[in-house]
Each structure stands twice: as structure tokens, then as C-alpha cells.
Image 1: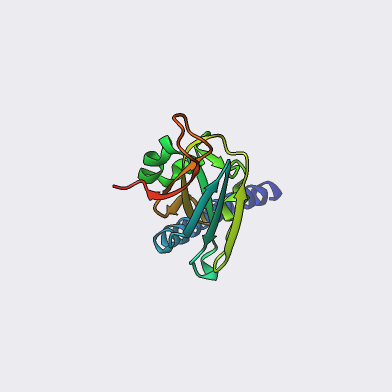
Image 2 (image 1 turned 135 degrees about the horizontal axis):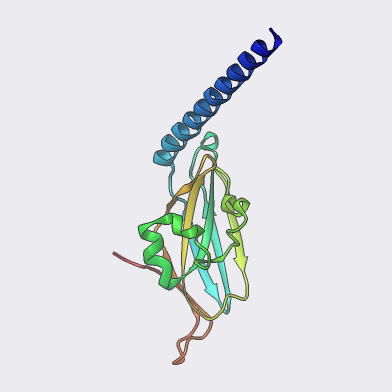
Length: 170
């Protein structure tokens, strides 16, 4: 009789585990889909001087959205790919600043916050500065603002350094 009870309990536990996993999957995907549609892009202001870029990022999302925003410095050649697919921000080698291998860096500005940062020693070249917001429950679907081009350092040919608040355009 105990053997039959053990088998029944195993089936019951297995069925309960499958039900819990199904409910968890549905719960995780439903809010993620809903939150992705409601995420607002951040407001980013950036300037460069020498080999530094200073950025200000404002997260316009409501507190209960569980959305974090961050300003990213990316190689200029990667800007079109990021505009087409913001999840490219997570690809290795695309982001120069911050270190996106740590997911916590994606949440620089919490809902309602404005955060200022400066990154030093960026190699000379052209970069895009783009702000992105992502919901905690849906890290693979960031929403970005319009990228800005930044010239860092002295480019070949004698061009002076400084910020260029030019958009990459369409």
C-alpha cells in the first residue's frame, strides 16, 4: 500500500511542478510583453572634452514600471545595428561604456531619477551616445532614444575635439 501511495505522491508532485512552471512562464511573459510596450525612452544629454564624455540621463518611466535607464557610449559603426535592434547593446564589443556584462549596469537611472556620469580615457574616435531603458522583467527588449554623435580626442587631419550633438539621422 505504501508503494502505491509513493507513486501517487510522485505523480501529484510532478503534476504540481509542471503546473507551477507553466504559471510562472505565463506570468513572466505576460508582464514582460505589457511592460515592453509601455516603456518610455530616456532623455540623454552628452558632451565630450578631450578623451572624456559627460552624460546626463533622465528616466521618465513611472516607479512601478521596474524600468532602469542607462546612457551608453557605442562605436559609431555599430549605431545603425543598435537603432535597428536595441538588443544589440548586449552584444560583446558594441558598448564602450558601461560594462554591460554586469546586468546591474543597465539600471543607472531608476524611475524618476536623473543621473550624471563622466567616463574618462575613451580612445580617440567617433562614438554614438544612446540612452536605453529596459524593464527588469524583460531585459531583452530595451527602448532607446535617438543616438548622438560624439567626437572624442583629436582626429587625424587636425579636427578639433569636442561634442557634436548631431543625430545620426534617418
